[in-house]
Picture (cartoon, rainbow, N blue to C red):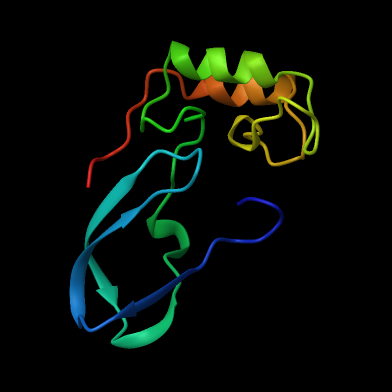
Length: 116
């Protein structure tokens, strides 16, 4: 959950039935799910609890490493609109880069997301 709302994915496809779907967000690790039922045509797809993404990928390389600590440190103690603020370092989505973001990064350290 981010920003108080459950994520919902809007798909537009000609596929019908089970498919492999890849999920990825700006500072989230990628996740592939096989066999998800995809609605035919344009429509909302709500994965509910079937898909959970790991947080902490500040540098966008699909892994949580020491390089993410470096990017977070450069943006530390900044808020959106400040010079040097990195929105991807705001892991908890509260509008600023703080010790709470370090906490999230540390809890996910050394994880790697699925590839496409």
